[in-house]
Amino acid sequence: MQIKFLDLPAEYNILKPQIDSLISEIVSSGEFIGGKHLQAFEKNFSQFSQTKGCVGVGNGTDALEIAIKALALPEKSEIIVPSNTFFASVESILNAGHRAVLVDCDKDYLIDRQALENAITPNTAAIMPVHLYGRACDMTMVMAMAQKYSLKVIEDCSQAHGAKTLYKNELKSVGSIGDMGCFSFYPGKNLGAYGDGGAIVSNDNRLLEVAREIANHGIRNNTKYAHARIGRNSRLDSMQAGILNIKLARLYEVNASRQACAKMYGEALGGLENIILPKAGDLPANNVWHLYVVRLAKIWRGKRKMLVEYLAKNGVACGVHYPQDLGSLEAILQHPDCRVASNQNAKNFASEILSLPIGEHISREEVAYIAEKLHAFAGELAR
Image 1 (cartoon, rainbow, N blue to C red):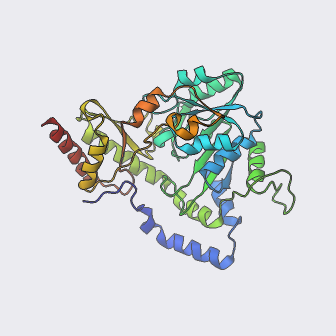
Image 2 (image 1 turned 180 degrees about the vertical axis):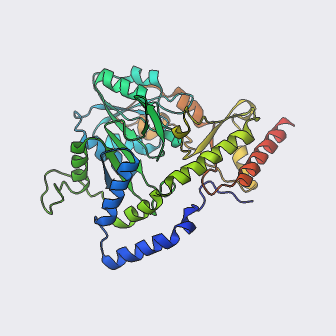
Image 3 (image 1 turned 90 degrees about the horizontal axis):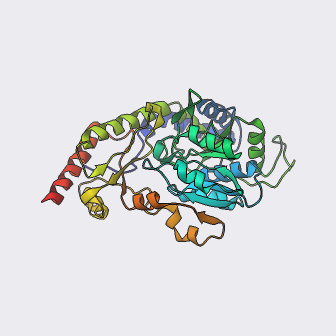
């Protein structure tokens, strides 16, 4: 049995006729930038994310950087970000001209409350919580901290399309609670394009207008050559917008499949004392399981390479997200605008975590097979 970490998405065959027709239509019309497909996706995705509006951009990293710039924070101010995330979270802060302050994660891999508060200084202007691996952060805590210290909030939702959290007694979509929410549509995401793509959502129409101007060469009101500010070229093209719009209609179904897969893993691996399984969250919608990340404990610590090789030999490809926490990276440690406030959990977890295959393409039989191989590995170690 061959089970890939990121296999061909199931919807590729299901939606292929619709997508082929869309591509043919766009090629015939020549409407490659802007137009009805982008407008339709922006409208539908803003409704999906429970926000007033959406701006499609070139990729998730651009979404973060443009959102930061739209907030017009004081020059060289500090933005707090978890040490356990992908490099783009910090990269966007630095490229927007600010200082990144890295803080530790809690046992569930999300930004730690005490570490966050301890890192706040008079120079802090914003918090960037990351909804990691598909699980929503505790936004009640984040927003309480932001209000206490008068900080802006940029939600990094790149791995959590459709995840929700309880806020003010309402179930709210990630991206709809902070000042701005940012998404990536990299092909491997729960909602993935057939190339790069990203989006910014917000309930503040002024911020959305500024973000749209920045993303389109500073052009105001979409009036050609009316450059009102220095912007950049970061637009979600019609082809990707159309494909995303088609796939968006199935996103709840895709997420439900991932949640079912995660539940199967929990049942199949619950008896393995050397693996710490991820938590679903307090509510079913808290986690849309972009990744299924386990942590190796006890006698399995230090044996990740051996386990990965063992699984690969048996047809199971795994990933590590991420092999090094950002607070330990040379590029971060040497950058004058980076400060590592705390990262001990993130540093420890980096050597222990392992991402098992998950997605709508993973069947019950495949989960059972993977679990069987993990139990077999445990047996071999115990000899």
